[in-house]
Length: 116
Length: 110
Image (cartoon, rainbow over all chains, first blue to last red; front, side):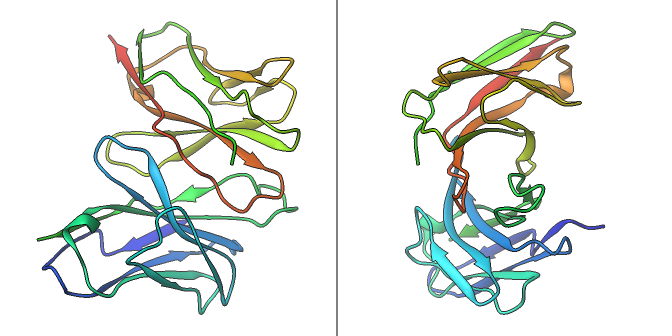
């Protein structure tokens, strides 16, 4: 049981390049989330999804796009990377409201992105 | 989302109990109190959550004030492996997301 898997774990980009971070969960969770964490700070919510085909903005959505084409996958895209997007990105998933365990988020190990 | 206030850092001795406080004076009646922790170079992990009553699990205990405006996470015997950032978060029952604050850095001395 892998839980939440993020790929890649590390990536270095040049300003203006694009890339996609992949999050995959094998727990049949309805909700998925993307957070970013900058040095010495807490996590900030970028986007989240409450089900296949649906997405919503979090606290810091600008410069990012997301897609949830399959229930088990949540993709985070950077169309034109900027140095300000250098960060560690965490994906998480949880069950939906009303289900047992709905209050528990399971996080991935993180993806460290550096934009030069 | 209602906000929480936590001390920036705390220090504890190994094998001693640790009480991590959290203030949430604007908590609403449907807000659950959640605690997560983040070990160095890892993603956050769930610790415990509660609504009104005190809660215990294998990791910790959660003591909630009668007026629910504050809570305390209790680690009964701190170990070096408990050194982490601890986040206290409020989540509405109908809410779809968790919003993290800066958390408390817990240092454990041997």
